[in-house]
Image 1 (spheres, one colour):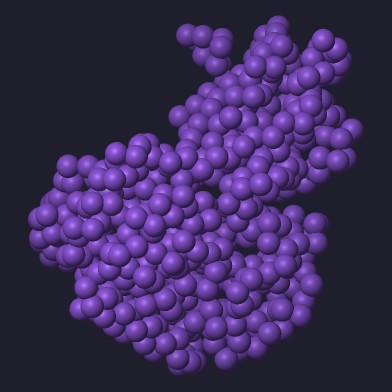
Image 2 (tube, rainbow, N blue to C red):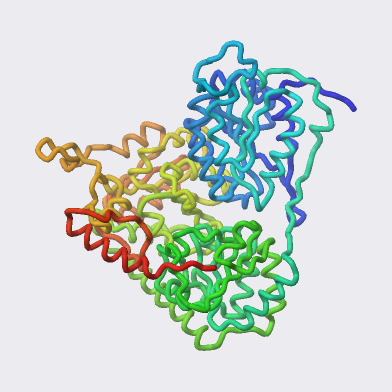
Length: 619
């Protein structure tokens, strides 16, 4: 066997750039390149290796957390069939990636992390930024990645790379087990040379198969569906990742089975399909909540049933309710005591469509669902009507953007009060048009994620909707977008603080305490003084963004038209009224103080106890 003498870092990059994936006969490179920030922990290793490999593009970013968000957003738009590598130095550079890595794993999105590590040789320990332990020398801050990584390894000897890299790819390309993968490589080992087998660097294609479930379980599922009177499908992210949206439409158009969508699954069905009840769960529509409440059969497709989807385990109240879960992940398929159909959503729905060729819900049920779809659309139309208030109404802002965007465009968000309103209101016309990171709901994802989404979707506009709170947490990737000539449109909605948590605080009786951006009041000693004079527009302009200010929705519409003509990243600033919101139709399980001097807290506790009575175990 021929060998090739390379450093560990060089060998890693050489291996990664020759990895491909294939699904349904379509083949592409799995890695689109590498995001990174160099420090003493990786500059001589991965920095040198990337410098001599211009065919593996390297992108300088501004924040390590941000680059992992960018990689995850890119992979999400690419249906998890392509992603980026993210490299950092040791210490804070590495731990900065942890938050976004947790989000990638929670959302089942593949991202490869290559954090630098302390010296394997240990001679000069403790090195700069090293975490010391009196119990062991075999530890560093990179061990913090273990609980949030789907695969974790530390390369202390060059030859360990030979068996580790295939395991990295096995996990990253697994539709069931994917997430953040961490390959921790000490800084001295990165630069160490070794005679690697030439075979390691040959092109390898990882086939993404479409697995079918046990046939006896599939037969039982078909029988259950045929016997159901009030079925409902909960479409999750797996529906979109598996390209199952077309077969879902065919199945439900014929059978009349209604569909409601999770955050990740929104776009599984166009909003105007009569079977689409819209958003499911805590942020759901009245129709989805009503139909789910009475359903005798719940068919989950690619959903992990978060508490938002299940309305804190109270969404399904029919005492005879049964569950069928179609999921590529065995862990998710067994949730709620379901009949588990472990496999690919597309081929399973195709099998169900064929087996249910004569099955239809009754006409009254079909008509009720269609009526609920129409009534919700009328509600949305009323929200979207131009009221032109100053400050603006957030629902109307969403409407202006929704009406302006086309089928190739993406709206992107992650945290605050916007996700709830977007989940309910946004009219989806394409599976990739709605991009919400809500598994982790990570403030700061928005602008970094918008960069990744635009890199994955260069032919469409990306509209990043972000509140002032998330913007202040992480806006630095605007600079990276300017650097790379990547154009996205950021709509910054200023509500002077944390609007979502302010509303939740008020609902729990705590009056929005600590959620406004205000000066400290010398008399009350609380943060209830005047509003802080933060100039977000000037901040964005200072990073190179083209900035437009809008006072109301009329000006916002004009700004959207102008922004589309601008070739660089553009930020539109608008004030919104945090006290005027889109109504919610379900509760959410959040603990309330059991003892308080405030009557508002006592009242909230009573409501809380009443809602708890609706919670169920689905066994």
